Length: 316
Length: 289
Image (tube, rainbow over all chains, first blue to last red; front, side, top):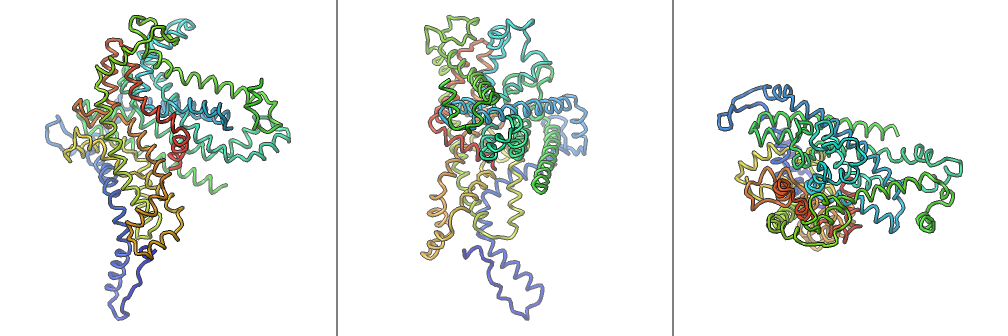
């Protein structure tokens, strides 16, 4: 590994101290150069589309245009204030919180059930796993196209089969009290199979002999789940929760296809609001301010989850 | 009851008489059937003749007079071959560039020591959280400034660097014994030659896992291409399908929508059913980012 070793420093003892430092610096840079060159292509794109983009959000959030063609003017915190007082944005934040909890909890619970039931591998469980995993593969847009019909009033799949059991046929996507829950059903259907995979992987770590010993000591299925399996799956839970939260913020394709945020903003989520501000209202300032707030919230959440993870590991 | 015995044949002897796990299994079977209903409806509705009328559209029993009319209509109304081509170009383009960037960066992290390694490592790590889709607004402005608005290159560009891929390759390269490389070093192989002829061939499973994740996720991308692409002939499948659905929904042509959806997802579903094991293990790695 000749490249990895820092080059020897042939510095004369009589050299002036600042020259010494400079030379050491150039030598270290020379030794690191191959690594920098290898990283360069990735760093260019990371700079442009991740970190540069973040800087741009920050700047754009501080400026404003009266009309799309008008010159920009410095607006300070006006954009952020405008977003925070926009009832469409605060509504979207509330919707997104309900949506995040209402999709993460059921899909994680279902994923755990699926993984527990299908933890042994044979032809039957493999087929069932594949069936539960299929929705993960298809585009959210395709899932939305199918569910548009499922939720169609009167003649749709849902009303056709269970409509007769209901006193009144609800307008699943058209009623502002129900639409958000209808949207959540798609997300649960689409993601539970994905989270199942992580629980299946996590269950491999549960030692079979401990389970059997617990059973011999008279522990029933619930006690084994509560005292052996769930503690073992703690890291999986934490990890899947992070992924589910991220999904709840970044996945809004079904909102676009099925409801466009309606009826009366009942299904508007934050990322869709950002899209609307940028593409429909050409308000880059407001869109950037909303992006900035979302990024801040997400980074806070990430820091929190990393700290919890570190604490858990440290505390054993 | 023979089936139950067979299903439980690997279970610890002592637990075979318990009832709760069996109830859980039965519930899972039931839910798996429910999970498949949208797909079942898609297949049945695709083959249903228009003469059955809207009231029978939801019927899950297949029609006795199946027809391919819906497939033909969807094929003619939607420009699916064109959309499919665009999607293939986007996925292939992204993957090819990613393979280069993640191999080089993964090698640097796996085998080289350099100043600022941990700082740069964190720059990569953060990208896992700052998913590009959140940065659609600034990235759209950048793509427009680069003159790439309404081009497939503009759709691809934000994904050319992949932190997930870099970490995957770093892990794969670290597992390769250094002795192999030392031998090549004695033969005078350059850095790039060693990567090309030793590290890459020995890491094929990781490359294929990455390819599966990359292609499925970009096959399914929607919001970003929707913003970048303006001309109808440059739409990828997802954007094409959403436009097609919006049009066909107006005329209540649900059979055609089912056929269009089927065409969009069929390539992925068929590939999955063939390479099921590989897909599943790849998706598990996608979590261990």
